[in-house]
Length: 419
Image (tube, rainbow, N blue to C red; front, side):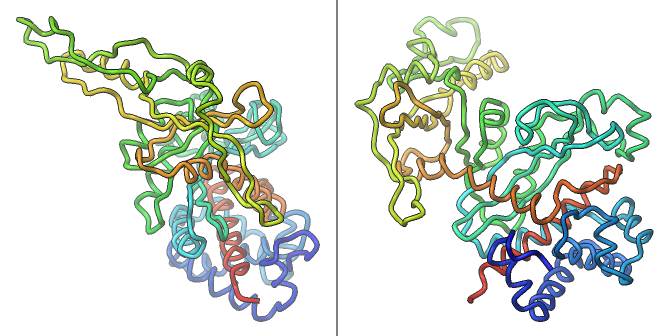
């Protein structure tokens, strides 16, 4: 099965003890797929597909996968199962997430997106667009995902395929790729919020949502996460404006007199960029915090600043929408800035809606925890073929990502087994 030289310790067990591990893999896969499939042929094909993903081989697209399975798999049946069979991939991801998240000591949820390089123009959502995975503009699909990350592993909580605006209005391409009529254009942050809100209804430990500036700079995303009762620690650019901690909000003495309007508190100063605020407060406000353990077991430290601020956008937007309503001051948030020793300015900034009593060490750890998503993508793509799907079916992409998630979840649990 999976090659020893290229995989995690959990995957090596597939070689070391193939019969016992295969039995566990089949039992795990059957239990997960039963949540979404009720036809025997679906369960058989699903089990074979997951086994094919775990088998050793450079490509995990359908044709080489079926070839590795020998006479056990029928190509036409597997193709129909993957591209058109009416089983719900969300139920599969949910079943995997609920089983695995309970075992990995979840610390955070990471929101991100990744590119799937493609040739041609018929795969749903494909176009020349910027991909952080590619590090440039290229012909690709973009998938948005949320992952639970913990001290003992990770597990995907959901996938969404980003459909650009030109795809959404092209009925011919939509029909050819079998894109459902109810699918409309949504930005990547909108897709990410929906994934997080959906996962919040599952039996998975809620944890702060982490994301890079592409998500943190989106004020609507932060507002929606907060409204959904989800905490976040999101990267933001230094141009993001906030009200400084010394700002006070008071009701002007002459406002509302004789007009019937509700009274609105007003700030006593203008907002400023977080870059300017941190620079004004200076290095004297920095704390040396250990944010993770190094490979030698010793703590890795950096200098951080933690300041309670209020979002300028939230106040201005609320005033514009509810000019006749009573407005409390905008919510308080943590502004976190990392200013490494020897640097002339901070390297990173985050906004977080965690409570004011949150320990600075936890804030720093969460801010610097997002890197784990790269390990997830590395295994999902390099070992399990997340980006190997060659079909041109909208539903097929979701089916493939759900089955890859199943294989990934099994390997995560295998890695946690006693030696």
